[in-house]
Amino acid sequence: MSAPQVLLISCYELGHQPLELAWPLAALRQAGLEASAFDLAVQPFDPRAARSAKLVAIATPMQTALRLGVQAAARVRAANREAHICFFGLYAWLNQDYLLAHGADSVIGGEAEAPLVSLARAVLAGGVEDELPGVTTARAPGAPYLQRPILPVPYRAPLAALEAYTRYVSDEAPRLVGYVEATKGCQHLCRHCPIVPVYNGRLFVIPVETVLADIRQQVAAGAGHIVFGDADFLNGPAHALRITRALHADYPRVTFDFTAKVEHILQYRQHWREFAALGCTFMTTAVESLSDRALEHLDKGHTGADVATALDILDQAGIAVQGTLVAFTPWTTLDDYLAVVDFIQARGLQENFRPVQMSVRLLVPPHSALAEAPDAGNWLGELEPANFSYRWRHPDPRMDQLHAAVTALVSQAEARGEPAPATHARIRALAYAVAGRAAPDIDPTPAPRSVPRLTEDWFCCAEPTRGQVELIQL
Image (cartoon, rainbow, N blue to C red; front, side):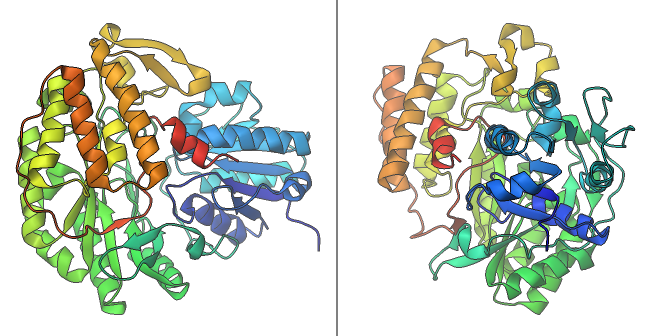
């Protein structure tokens, strides 16, 4: 049997089995097109698959994946000069100009499955002669493909087993993790979010039956915990409840987590006890900052005071939080940073805000709404296409110095396996030293013995640190 002539490559999807491959694989299979796939986060590059492919499509849902994807494309081209190389995903469309000028034959943004099927048919038939909806080439510029998707159940058989990916850890034995999405896109317009330039507030709901079928196949493969990877699971609270109620009815011992905005924690406070009863052990929320000024610039929809209220609501429901931060922005002062380290210390949140979050620096990719902000001229530098982002400097040089020092500290701590509380203590001491002040004594609220979480701590809306990229080099 000859090798498939369509090859899909994933480089990194936050430690989970790549849904960005499973859905295109299902769509191609439904269309009668055979494809192979591998995930460079857990598998070696396969030059034989690259040599036999006429179409190679590389998934780039985040910046780290894009950086590694460019390297993968170079290896594909070295093995196969004739292959049509396509990049698809959020960061592919945002960086289409660079990609098309540096080896890519096409780029797809938005809902990639239907355009990929059309592209595969064209390439296998002899080449892309006509404009294809959703497919951007050097001679045919295109917009993101935002027609409502009709998606089959993701096809996961060609992918690496769940054992190769992140684990769910709590007081119990670690569990394998499944990953699904109940919606695509997002109805919110947070200015720093890479989803906004592509979807511009559009939200697509995946049918309950499709989501549950994907859950079932992953539980059958050993998953004991399910991640709902939606940009915000509570964009559709009724939809979320239908799915989690059905999940719990079918698998009472399977736990789950999801992501939701701080404002949704407050808005839907009546649902949190039920989510806990259904098996939600933790949720992720984009706190980003405690500075109202920074939050306003990011258009996050909450205030610093709202964060404390949201944490109280979740605590009362018995659901832990894993918070994300954009600790360094042009509007975050040194006093703002000190307020965050003191907040974490006072509330005993060292396990809830992983130390890497304290090193996160704002990423401004091409097409970002932040590049059009009224004050952008005060802080935004030139676009660096090869770095897939705009350069920017903080008006207070101490903040850039602190960022470099915290990044190095966190990288060293991760390499040593240092406990999160110890790393947080060193970050706090470092921040106060930069400020030239003594850190005040704060008696923390007793922290729980352990906080449920995944073993993968990185998030996608920020610049990857050097250590993160090095850990997953090809």
